[in-house]
Amino acid sequence: MVVLEPPGGPSVQVYRCRLRAKVAREEGRPDPDFKVAVSLNKYTFRDGEEMSMEITSTQDCYITVLSVSAEDTVYVLLPHEYRRDNFLRAGGRISLPGEEERRMGITYRVRLPEGMERATELIKVIATKRPCSLGAGWEKAGGFNYVPTPRAALEALCRWLVGIPLDQRTEAQATYLVTR
Image (tube, rainbow, N blue to C red; front, top):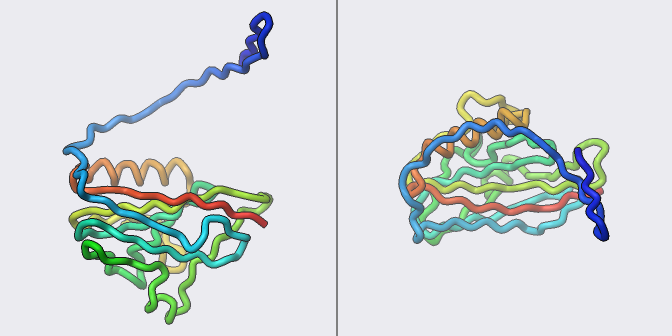
């Protein structure tokens, strides 16, 4: 870190860093008529509260729902062992958890990581025009696939996404806050 102190102005901290990146060329152009949306039952939760969500799309598609925790672990919420059907008709709606999942006792509860008073987390929805499997070979917890480390999660997600042409996918996300 370097601190610059210009005359007559506030000091400015400058950080020098090195970045190593792998770049892949994405194929196709986004389809402007292909949209997906996600809405949560609320956007500020207390630790332990239940979350639910509704997902809609403008075209027939297959939905993948990811939860990115404050500890950067990525969980695949849909499809999963108990709900493999992730097809959504244009104009239709997917609810998570759905009625069948609720009957099985599946709920989504937000949890604040140990030692944190508040955290921002993310739900990411990826809609694809063809079935695309994410999570094969990932670890499992309670029937849900996940990647437990930030670097591995990001690499796995990016590798999967770049393999789907831009005109075959669209994305939406919702951030939410978790407090004690």
